[in-house]
Image (cartoon, rainbow, N blue to C red; front, top):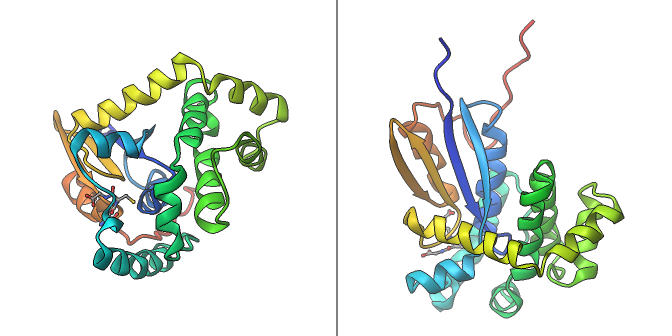
Length: 226
Ligand SMILES: N[C@@H](CCC(=O)N[C@@H](CS)C(=O)NCC(=O)O)C(=O)O
């Protein structure tokens, strides 16, 4: 009998570059490990507020380090994140509420687009350094991810509905209940227990806990069975 698949939940926000790194690696491993990957778009600002945490770049010495760390990690993980000192201001300024509400609307109605839409938001914010909250920006992302203009327009209309706002709030609360204080937060349900991991640099450890082999951040896919 085949072993049961491990449910792995990824709580992320597109304002978080480390979430992008974790997202891409888990997207790769969902085809290799015996896991069901569940995307849980949540609001990092809400997690920070509820836990009393602060964006790590608010400490100037850490901000200096993070610039280097994210550049090196992007190269190592093969994720095209581009970061400069101005980005920390951008994060603190506009945040990601518009984008995360749109992604939540996708999660509720067109989950098959969750992966490409989330990725396109990261590309727009972290590779192209453009806005992700204005309606025109959101429509451009949706088009890029393969949604029709009618679909995108409908989803955009949903963004300010109580249903979408509540769902984003609930997902954020779920992350906090699991113990999250930042992102990416990864929760593996294994052997009747919940294991929380913080960070894109804890996926090797995740593999070890759930009995899966770590093949580096850019694993090659197994060859198809003949
Ligand atoms: N070492 C972690 C760092 C992750 C990280 O700093 N995430 C930020 C958001 S981009 C955060 O939520 N930080 C909260 C904290 O460090 O307490 C990784 O490689 O992913």
